[in-house]
Length: 124
Image (cartoon, rainbow, N blue to C red):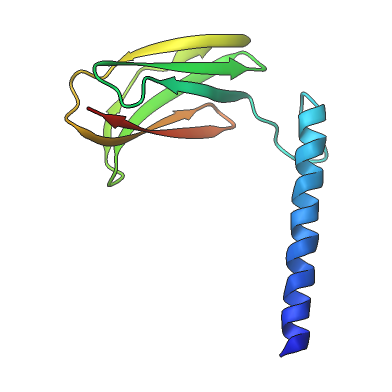
């Protein structure tokens, strides 16, 4: 029993070490490195949270491309899908009208051809 626990612990430590190494390599590079996918964009801030009528999404992008935004309720049902829009290099803000939503918890899914990010927010 001790041998099995020891082997599991060694495996977990070695896998987490690999993940940390991959993360540090990807943060130093601006493209794909050794088969590890690098983020095209990051959601830096979603505010205000809780939302009344409009929400602002700050995005930082390292490349230009196309983004798609979908909105899901807490049960995972897609409520709305917006048309694709062009993502430019650098920082940008998206202001999204959510006045049609009822009070509750929702999830944004923002995706490009190579990446998906999600953000949870509350609607008042």
